[in-house]
Amino acid sequence: MDLANVLYEVKDGIALVTVNRPDKLNALNRRTLEDLAEAFAAASSDASVGAVILTGAGEKAFVAGADIGEIAGLDSQSGREFALYGQGVFRAIETFPKPVIAAVNGFALGGGCELAMACHVRIAAENASFGQPEVNLGVIPGYGGTQRLARLVGRGLALELLLTGDRIAAPRAAELGLVNAVVPSADLQARATETARKMLTKAPLALRHCLEAVNTGLDMPLEEGCYLEATLFGLCCASEDMKEGTDAFLQKRKPAFKGR
Ligand code: COA
Image 1 (cartoon, protein in one colour):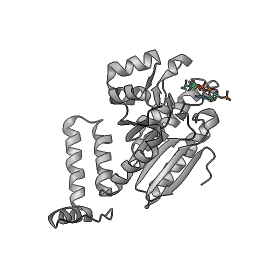
Image 2 (cartoon, helix red, strand yellow):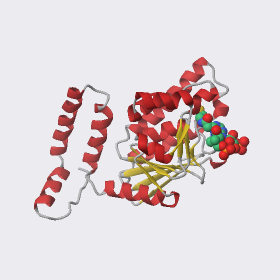
Image 3 (cartoon, rainbow, N blue to C red):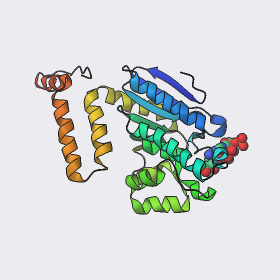
């Protein structure tokens, strides 16, 4: 892989993807988005990878937003394309077939907050902060923020954050349901790794179908979402892992899942 602004490392079944432009607080320029897309494609096709942890380089930022220097040069046509490109990269993360954990180690603003929201689970360091400050720049979020924030925290709180551009600290983000947990900064990577490791002990196909049931089902009426769930449940029942999981329970031993 030829990555300029993202670090990619696989260890013990976990891909660690690090946005690496610390001098620009990991702001997402086009190249960084392309690198993210490439890193996630690699993690998707690598059968040895069971989960991904996404974080930012340095002490200060997860990602401080889309690159404002690039935004400044956009017109209506290129602005639309800019948003659609980023949305596509983030959607690929949201629909990623393996768990993606955001380890939010500082500023998660604008595109950074949107990136964290596209991940499946968000663990924040105590020094993390969140916000959608785009209205300060004369724009709105373009990478799915208006949609995912409202779905995560509800319409009223999302509109308050979007319309004020306020930055909130990690504990408040946890109160709102924007993050799953807040941990001391020194413990962030260990906590994200521990969470990923726990998921790695589960049946991979079941994880994949959980992700699909929630990601696709939430956009459907309840009845259709339940129908999708039943279909995915049926697919699980045809897997070797379902036989292994139920056998192991009945035989009072630990299951050895194979992802088949
Ligand atoms: N795009 C481009 N560059 C960015 C950036 C972004 N979103 N966020 C930070 N940077 C750059 C700064 O321009 C600065 O670069 P320089 O050293 O070459 O001047 C560097 O990162 C460090 O940022 P700085 O502002 O000096 O750090 P700070 O600690 O004083 O402030 C923030 C941190 C996050 C409050 C501030 O950088 C900020 O408000 N960033 C923009 C956040 C934003 O609006 N995001 C949404 C974009 S749509």
